[in-house]
Image (cartoon, rainbow, N blue to C red; front, side):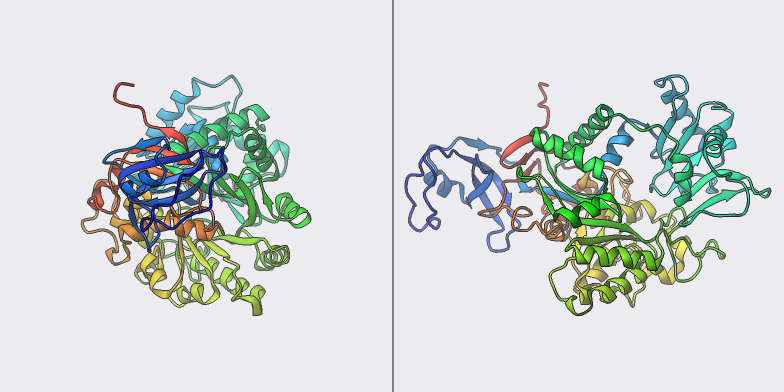
Length: 560
């Protein structure tokens, strides 16, 4: 359809569209564009072939400009820019969806019940895998042991990943397989970047923290390509059904990127993936040799690398400047030595690769900031957009360094509400002031990008919006929120999952807002997230998810 004519005084004239171009038009009671110059409109028009926005404005104006355009009327629903999870693990979610779900289990007994039910789906000799246990939620908060699993599973090997992905709980059968394949886990030695928990006799007790987990995990048989693709597709569908149009996928291997490329070639990627290479390994080497990667379809790219500094707070692996308040002989773990880390950062810098580094403890964050400052040197003011993933427990004197160095704090709101019951026990009343400190970062001038870290947390950005605005669990506890002065406004939270997340991925010229020339990525919600009560944010309904102006998810109607 050729556009007819510009309507004077309504919208600026645009270049004439090609004769074959089709324009689509969506009308809604409220469309929040994310553009401060035009924050709320009633209609959006896009060109179907390119999937790019042509106009936003009032419904009357756009109906006059595009009288022959197919009209999609979503009525009293609210449209927001596509939601972007700035820190997640797509393949990790796919794997989790095919394993025993231990999330929310209240004690060891409940874990065993879920495992025994899941075991019925397994073939003889197949590993029993699960994820989501969290001893901090149990009455007995001590780490579990292999003995807790052995009676129920004396022969079948069991590997259970902790909720944060930084510890594995295994049974004796799994330990035996690992020891037959390599070094004994008994003794007083520890692997680099990890910790084997042992009993008084020096035998492994059944929990392996961070780098030690690979001693057992590496023995689990690898999946074939068909199984990996099935898991990836399940994860992608879960993401779009929760309103995600983009994900920053942290730690993508060369093999996983190849799988994503294959789906992109086939037109089977329903959302955008900003893939970050898995450390100083093959994928980063590919970027250095061939240059930054972008798929021609516009839904897959790799322009950054995800590095690791320390472990996680829940398993006491986060590296702290002084010892844990509830474990006075433990300072946490460095998963990468400062020297090796600097080598990797310099390599990425030389290849023009964006650096994103996992750092949770105050020591871990300080080492990353020190290294970034050293490597960036005189070009620290360049538009590098280096990131610290989690920025979870940061010394108050280090928070202003983020803005000074141009470093993005990539944070996950649901981590605060998941950890608030025990976090202060770990770090004490003074250090907790620099933990999950969203407003302190904003007031310092730092940029925030928000995500979930799924499958550590759920693949649902509405839960992130709710946690960011309330700092409460879903039962509304504690009253008024935990450290309520650090709550974000609904507008700040939505921006963190849209335009700020896009900016953190160097994607602001493509996505993050509903603005002329950007991609028509948006989500249709049943209510307005900036108008509903804060305690309703987690209950917003995703009616549909759109990428490039095409629906990639539609909720089932009451009629089915």
